[in-house]
Amino acid sequence: MRHLVKCSSVPEPTIHDHPRVLFICTGNYYRSRFAEALFNHHAQRNGLPWRAFSRGLALFFPQGDISPHVIQGLARRAIDLPNTAANPAALTTGDLEHSTIRVALYEPEHRPMIARQFPGWENRVTYWRVPDLGEMEPEEATALIETEVLRLVEELKRESEEREERCARHMAMSHAIPVFHQREADPRLAKGGVTTTGDPCLTLGAPVGEEDNAEPDRGH
Image (tube, rainbow, N blue to C red):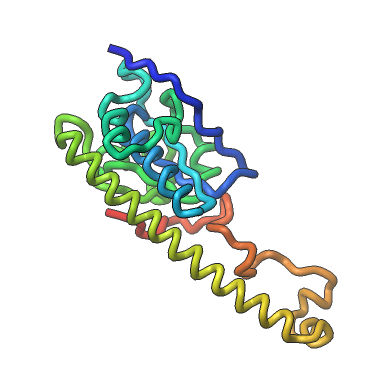
């Protein structure tokens, strides 16, 4: 049975958009969509610029538009359905390249699938431990996803606060040092320009396409 849902889609990610979290599962029908909706809801509530989108690795399974477990889980938490996209979408190389954080929901299932379909990217993804239906009851799985999403939101919130503090100190020092001495201290200024590298006021996350080969540990 197909579950037709009328809701506005989350905007497609672009290189000019917010820093992005990409959630990956098999069919982009259940686990990744629930994670996407939870993250967008809590990121907005916490005033974070981050936005999530989700993709699937095997959309050929005829499941429908969205799992009823997602609809029910979000309803129980009073979270609006439009926090996730209206339809499943297949993962592409562009999605991987234009995301800052990438999370696959179940390592034993998804690491080999990513390795086959997108060689080299399997080591640039964080893996959680949320199996599909049949291995874990939906109530337990959605609760586990919620725990991991809230942990990620808190981590990004803490990083944002620390960045703001660094930015404030940076700005205070910049105003305290005369321009002439700033040019002596920083050869980039003497050349007529400053790059954004290392500027705590301009860094929102890992630059697109310039992340390390291994993702930081943002979950299990």
